[in-house]
Image 1 (tube, rainbow, N blue to C red):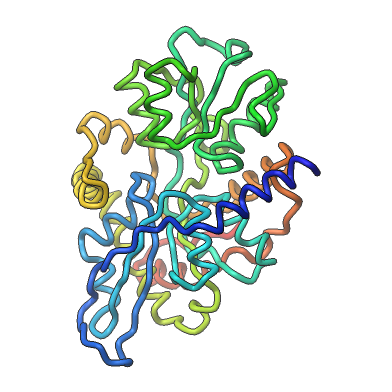
Image 2: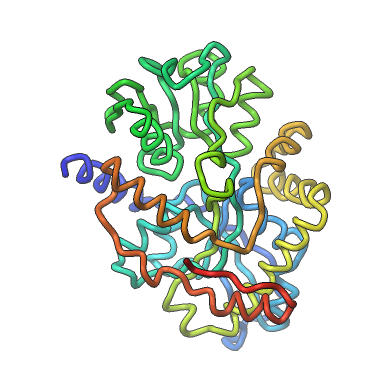
Amino acid sequence: MKTRRVVAALAALALTAVTAACGGGESAGGGGSTGAVKEVRLGYFPNITHSTALVGVEKGLFSKHLGSGVSLKTSTFNAGPAAIEAVFSGAIDATYIGPNPAINAWAKSKGQAIKIIAGSASGGVSLIVKPEITSVEGLKGKKIATPQLGNTQDVALRYWLQEKGLKTDVKGGGDVHIVPQENSQTLQTFATGDIDGAWVPEPFASRLILESKGKTLVDERDLWPNRQFVITHLIVRQEWAKANPDLVKKLLEAHVESTKYITDDPAAAAKTVNTAIEKLTQKPLKPEVLDSAFKNITFTNDPIASSLVGSADHAIKVGLLDPVDLNGIYDLKTLNEVLAAQGQQSISDK
């Protein structure tokens, strides 16, 4: 219980500061200043795992489907807690986000704040280590980074180590010393030897390999059935979604077209994503990093619901989440209507 209180306090602290960088966004036709003009406020991260959003914005797909009289305002975030705080405050209507922040939002609001309405990406997470580490036993006494205490990758690492019989704690003690830090910092600390490895998402996994001679000890896809697990999905604020079912459908139509664009032509999509990342961060990815990272991610409309349940169970088992009932967290009805209209198979929320 003490561990859970520590994590809850840290999460609450993180939620007090919204670190969104809000831009003017993409205009979806119309413009003007009359009250009749509707607005959709969409959040996402400037990450490869959020490529569905990046392509949708960069190629104007959201504008096309929202149509005349509706404007799109975009906000970019660096961490899940900030995006969830924006949802809670009503600052955004929908956002692309990872599984654990969605679980936390559902639990904290007692199922009242959000719904998951579509999947976006699967895979793209690995444990990268120094070349001399060749087995899980070699991790004893070593420092391994994760992006944030209690985040999706942090939970995955702690659970995997627990399953292998190795102990950890939230203060960095135990058999393996887990060091939560920003992914950008991890690139530096791995290069300098201050850490021995990191459980991180793309493109950071590929960068640790290509820039600092790291190697893959665990590809997280190998730990899940059919090598599939959710890394990004699309959530909406329930109050907004109930009041604007037409806009939810248009948002999903753009989402589905963006997914199709990526899967039909991954090479072109990767270039589009890099263009979008450069605009948002002023730092495009190197071609070899972009190519490596893109190959490790599967883009899909399926939220892979079973893996969300698994992630919650893992967080509970390592003491980072109190038991939570996820029944009702999905609303895939509109997504399946959009897919049916295009002759595609429906997706289950089980």
